[in-house]
Image 1 (spheres, one colour):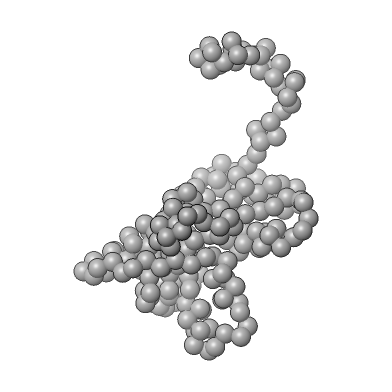
Image 2 (image 1 turned 60 degrees about the horizontal axis):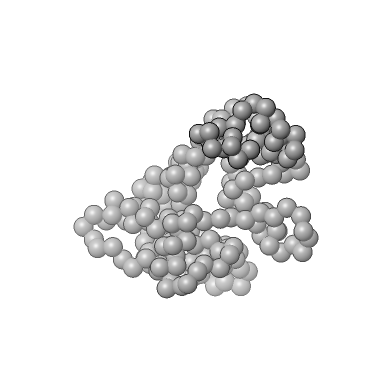
Length: 203
């Protein structure tokens, strides 16, 4: 096998068959990457983190760049596992129509509603700010955690003013995620995107 790998990194059919017989078929060969809404992803991750079972666990994982940005802004040595950083500006409200959101019914119904955008990528936050406020300087970027923010949003004992502010939050998905989601849906064609009792969801 070592000799085979030396030959330009290619294996013969016989060698591939021998490896398949000895090791078995890779279960991920026919795997499909599926697209799921954020609320389902958060539910799966929350249940997994609170469960004491040793079954399948789910995690919402930020990109390497997002982790590095959060570490730099918060002056940390590392980001705690399971944390998902979100980025925002204080006092940054914008009309729904200006945020270039796709597939959001409220954009069509109430395009001029002021919302507070929360971003998963620092660069996208800054880009939208510069687009909407070209003559203003860039404010200090603030960070929080996705799950901590969601807990605060559903906290029953929030004051009326807090509830009013929390109801304005809108999560802005990364543009790269939207592009990849369309690619995944296109590759899947008419096949069911996912079924929780039969498939492993890759996020």
